[in-house]
Image (cartoon, rainbow, N blue to C red):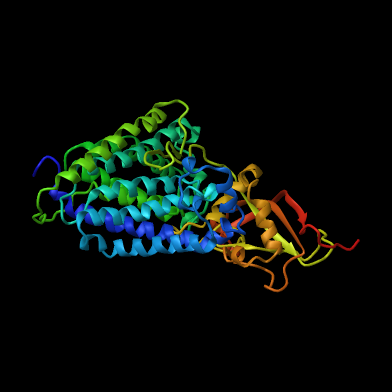
Length: 473
C-alpha cells in the first residue's frame, strides 16, 4: 500500500457511496414533492422574495440567476435522477474525473435548494448532507483506491457530529447530567414514531441506562475512530447501533441515516481489495489541496465545541463545507400541539361546527397512532412542533399557512393527511388552539385505544377569515 491510498477500504467506500446516494435521493424527493407550498411562487416563504433581499455571495444558489416553479422542480427531479444513477453505480462507468464531476452535481443542486430554503431547511442534517456530500466528491471510483486523507475527513465529520452533540447535552439541560431526560424526550420529541409510546413507557432505570450509554457513545467512543483497526470498526459499529436505536424511537428525518452512512466509511469490511493502478498526480494534488482547506476551515467548529457558549447546527460558510452539529441541548417536559380548525359558518362561535385538519406526522387525533416517516422529512409538521413551543417560531409562515387553508390551496393541502372541507367549498374561518398532549398510560390505552390524551390550554389564533370577504352581522 502506498502512502496516499488505503485499498483495504474499497468495499467501505462502495457501501458508503451507495448509501449516501440513497440519502440524496430521499432529500431531493422531499424537495420535489413539497416545495410548491413551502417555497414556490405562491408558497408560504417564496424563493423570489428571498433572493431579492439576500445577495448571491451570502447564499449561493442557482435560483439567484433564475427562479420559476418549473425550474425548481426540474432541479429537484434532476437531483433525484442523478442520485438514482449514483445508487445504481453510474460513477463506476466513468473515468475518474467524470465520476468526481457526477458526485459534484447533487451537491451543487442541493446546496442551491438549502441556501434558499429559509426556515424550512434550517436543520442540522441539511448541512451534514452537504458537508459529507462534498467530501464524497474526493473519494474517487474503481480506478483508484480510497485516499487515506478522505477517509480521515469522514471520520473527522463523524467525530464532530457525535462529540458536539454530547458536549451540547452536558452543557445544556441538567436532566442530561442527572440521566433523566428520557423520562420526557420520547413523549416530547418533534415527531414521535410508532414505537415511541413503548419507549416512553420503559422503566425509569432503563431510561437512565439509555442516557448513560448515549454519553459514552458521544463523548468517549468518537476518539476511538482514530485508533487502529479493529478498534475503529468497533467504535463505528457502536455508533451505528446507537443510531438504529434512535431510528426505532422517533422520526428524525435522515439525521440518523446520514450518521450511519458516515460511520460505514470507518468500517473495514473483510474482503480482498481489487488491484488498481496508482492514483494519478492531478488527483493527488486536488485531494490534498481540498483536504488542507477543509482542515483549515475546521478551526471554527473546533472553537465552537470548546466554547462555553457552544451553539448547535450552524454553518460557518455559505457552501456548508464545515459545520457544527448537535441536538436537544434542552428537553421539553411538556408537549404542546397547535390544532388548526375551520368552519364553514359565516359567523364563527364557540359552538360552531369546527372541523380539525389532520397532519401526516405530528400528533392530532388522540386515537391515531404515530406513523413512521423518516428518513422522509415532513417539513411543515416539524415546523408546527416549533410553533407550539413559541409563536415566535411561526411568525414568518403561519399566517401564510392559514391563508392557504382558507383558499383550499391544492399544494398546501397535499402536505396534510386530511382536510375536513371539500375542494370546492373552503372554510370561511380558521382558528388555532393550543393543547397539551401526553402519552396515555397502559390502563388508559387498554380502555380507550388512544395513544394520546390532550387538554385544551388556550387560544393560539382567533377565528380568522380572508381579508375582504364579507361577514354578516
